[in-house]
Every structure is written in structure tokens, then in C-alpha cells.
Length: 398
Ligand SMILES: *Cc1c(COP(=O)(O)O)cnc(C)c1O
Image (cartoon, rainbow, N blue to C red; front, side, top):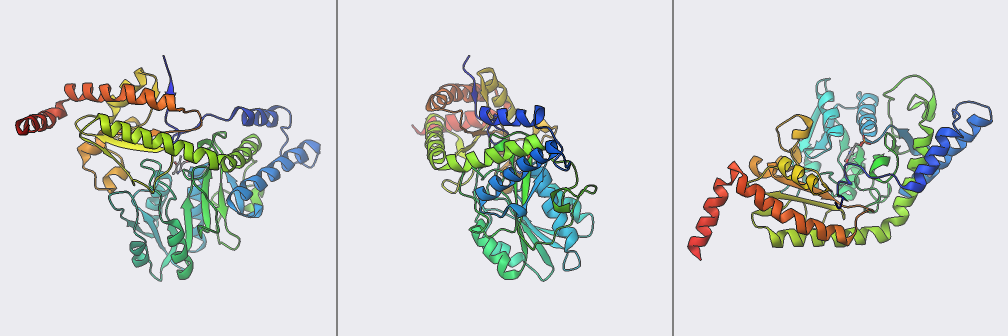
């Protein structure tokens, strides 16, 4: 059976060449970068070369990169670190309702510890309005944290403008760029950001590694304590193989962007058009144009995302759904709900995220197998009473 992986926003396969380098730093050059002998020096050199690669990919200085265990730790480090270091200046934080849980739950944690958080709503495309952010800033605001692009619906936020605003008001600005790096241009000065989270496994690097960019001069309290690694900002022996792989993945992601982004966009748009042509009672979620090149997110009325995922899986297709039943909760995605999509429509959502391994033939395969599955589920679904009525009403008009 054909297998089609279209879940690249969940994770990506590691680049085989990068995997070879990672292996080398596990087996041969396995030293601890803090050791002074040759093994240690070799590992230190590899870590610093990776730091230069990561920094240069986003227009940063190597000293501004703190390696972390991934996007989640980077988000936690940014939000908790800025809040703790600047709490004498103020205790108010601004974020959006559509952030990744790594950001949202960290903000909720701070709310339990005396901080106040404003959650900026989004419009029906998933975008925050810059004016809403401007209005939320008070004398007590120390941090704005808003993601560059949404992991579920692919909507790109007006980061440059928010960054300009934050700078004018003297408020730190953190951006979760986990989904945007390698898909659209990401440059820390052009985006006016002070802190930025990146994860390696979303860009064909190894899992369990990433970084937080911290602009020179930003006051940040460490969230881990122990050794003096990462300029005393993140204690713990460096994940040398992971860091090496992450550095190479960043370099390649930025090099490939020019060719890969238009290729992904073409496939994305053919998927969107093809599905909308083949199925009624179907809507595209997210912004029509301010959208990541590899993201497709639909709601199919009268069906449940989970059943759809299972049936697609039986056809060899790996996708994901906007409802979080897989994580043990029956609530649909907080992102779709924040965009004003009704519960029952949000339940029938499907996310397809394209990547390097996908071809036009994969798009053809999805367009072949997806519509009959949706039709079959609708015929079986108890939710389709509405659908039958609509269909009857429709034929009555013909
Ligand atoms: C995947 C993801 C994260 C978490 O990154 P990990 O490296 O998996 O911890 C954070 N934010 C966004 C937007 C993501 O897509």
C-alpha cells in the first residue's frame, strides 16, 4: 500500500546526511564539551560551530543562542525567565488565544503565581489585530509573547508590526517560531524580536533539541540550576549530537527555503482547491494567503476528525486532527474555537502538513482517497441528520 506522510507540523523525518553526523557525535566524538582533554575540545568545537550555523540562519549573534531540549523548553525559558527577571518592573504579560500549549500553559502557570495575563483574541482567520495588542499594553507590561505561525491552521501573525510596537513601548517581545523557520523567512532584526524559540525536529533535525534566541541585553533568569553551561543560562551537559544535527538542519532549512517554499505552496493550493471542488459542507480553516506554505486545514461538517484519521491511516495516510481526543480530552482544538468555529464543526477537522518527502503524486493520492472516506463517514454518522435535511432541502429547490 502507498504510504503518505502529511503530518510534518507534528514532526519530520531526520535528514539522512544529518543523521550520519549525529551518529558520529554519539559514537566517536562523544566527549563532554566541558572537559579540557582532546575529546572534550572536539565536542566543544562542534557545539560552537552549530551555534554559529543556527545564529547565521536567523541573523543573530552566536552568543545570543541558548541550546535547549526543544521548542517547549525554549518557550518556558523565555516566558518564565523574563517574568522572573523583570517582576520588579511589572507583572503583566500579553499573549494570544491561539498559542501552542507550551506558551499558553506557561502563562497560566504564571497567573497562579501573581502575574496577570491578557489573552488577545483572533479574527476568523486566526490572526491577532495589532491594535488589540497596542490597547492591551499598560505600564505594568513586561512581555508580549505571540507565535510567528500557528501549528494547527498555519496562520502567520503580523510579527514585524507587533515587534515595532513592543520596542516603542519598551516591552520584551518573544516569538515562538517553531513552525515558521524553514518555511518562511525568519530574521530576528527584520521581525523586531527579543526572544525566539526554535525546534530541531520540525525542520528535519533530531528530536529533543532546539534553542532560544535571546537578544543581547535582555534580562533573563535561568530556569534550571547546576553547571555553568550556555553562559550560565541553561545548566546541564550539552546534547552534543542533537546540537550538531540541529545546526546542520538550520543551515539546510534556510538554504532550501527558496526552492522548497514555492514547491510546497503549489501542492498546498492544489490540495485546497481539489478538496473544495470534490466535497461540499467543507471549509478551509485559517488565513487564505497569510498562511504557511505547507499547511492545509479543513473542517468537514457532520463527521469526527478521529474517525477520519483512522480511515486515512488504513489507506496509508498520516495526518492529524484539530480535536484533541488523542490526548485524552474530548474538547476540540482551542485554536479552532478561538477562531469562532462552532464545536461540532471544529470536531470534524483535518490537518495535512506537507514536507520534503511529499510529491505531486501524494497530492493526487489524497484527492483520490479522502473524498470517498468523508462521504462514507457522513453516511454513517449520527451527526448527519443535518446533512440529510440540507441535502433534501437542496433537492427540493432543484
Ligand atoms: C512543536 C511545537 C512546539 C514544541 O516543540 P518541541 O520541540 O516539540 O518541544 C512549540 N511550539 C510550536 C508552535 C510547535 O509547533
